[in-house]
Amino acid sequence: MHVLIADDHGLFREGCKLLLQELDPKASIAEASDFNEVQEILKSQNDFDLILLDLKMPGLGEIEGLRRTRELAPATPIVVVSALEDPYYAQRVMSSGAAGYIPKSANHSVIFNAIKLILAGGHYVPPDLMSSTGTKKPNLGDAKPGKRFVDDVEKVLTPRQLDVMRHLAKGDSNKKIAEKLGLSEGTVKVHVAAILKALNAANRTQAVIMASGFVRE
Image 1 (tube, rainbow, N blue to C red):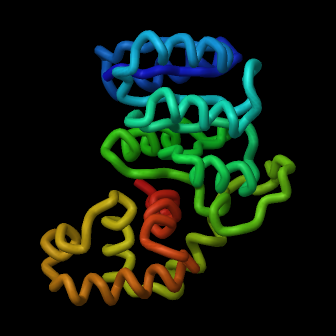
Image 2 (image 1 turned 120 degrees about the vertical axis):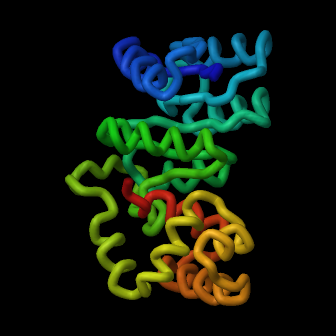
């Protein structure tokens, strides 16, 4: 696994390196401390399996830095790891082509499993950051992000729909979900429609993003 960690805090980069080495002891890791270094690295090598990117770094603006990184590494999953815990940023990041948005306040298990999910081709963002309108101000008051969202969803979905939702979070197709759960594709489609309604998701892609934050190991 070849990973680029871009963050202007060396201590945080070290923490990310330790976590990535848990995922893959042979991981090859490059580091950047600002957006200019990110661009220099990506212009010389573009074979990364994953990019972990802070939004607030010297060199470029928050979303512009992400977009420029996306242009230089169009095929590489980019995960924004940020102290900005506001729906405004999470939603803009995901609409700009990122594969995930992980708050820096998230615990080790959440970050570890989110990165695992993204490396497997999925997406991750805390559901509370995708289900409301942002204020562009950090919101650090909720000690358990998304708990109300999780409780509400569990109340309105059947156990079988919750099973479908967990596979949806992994990015499985209706056919694959049907095979795994022993259902017909038509039945899976009905369950997916119910999940979209429960999540108030506009489409399947948004539902996958929100469901990935719902799933807890």
